[in-house]
Length: 235
Image 1 (tube, one colour):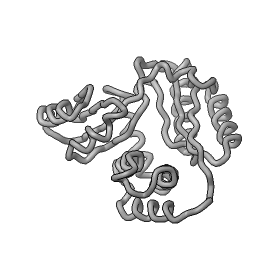
Image 2 (cartoon, rainbow, N blue to C red; image 1 turned 60 degrees about the vertical axis):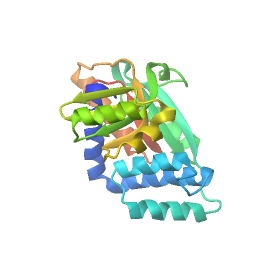
Image 3 (tube, rainbow, N blue to C red; image 1 turned 30 degrees about the horizontal axis):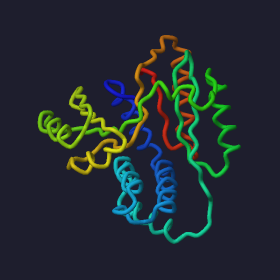
Image 4 (cartoon, one colour; image 1 turned 30 degrees about the vertical axis):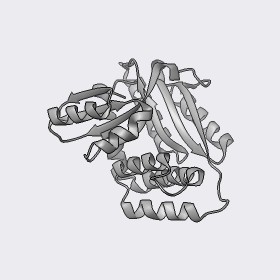
């Protein structure tokens, strides 16, 4: 989801977020709660929490909501125990798909994933079946900026790549440099997360395959257990 196709996917997600704001808040609340329980409620001491807060803000979650989620999570004992599970598979015509989940019932989630892939012309695979086609990288998107100024600042901060297209700017980092680069850039980000960036892309020419792939992505993103979906479909 990098380069020219990355922004298209982000626009698709933002449109979906506008229509289903409550659902994205629920997903972010779950992710924040997990990292708070694992590493504490202070983002200065919990780098994962700092990253998730930045991701939540890029998804337009208000600061007041974020603060309430953190306070609630830091005061909870017990409650649902969520685990992070990565699912990999193929969509129609071999499109590679990676699904990140946080679930309190792995049997339910695995069943849902298998059902979605099977129903829409794909198949759920084993761990590692498609992840080798992706690089794990930090990805920051800026909608409006002076290209030369932003590029210079990004590269000076430690970015490994800078892509500009149609007034949109994508900054890539190594995963362990993501927080450093993000904090060094004083911009509002349309997206800020550590992503699976595909090395190559797959085009779909059949209208039926396009319809099935779109529906598969919709079903995955609508599932409460799913935190993120990555793929190499060149939309």
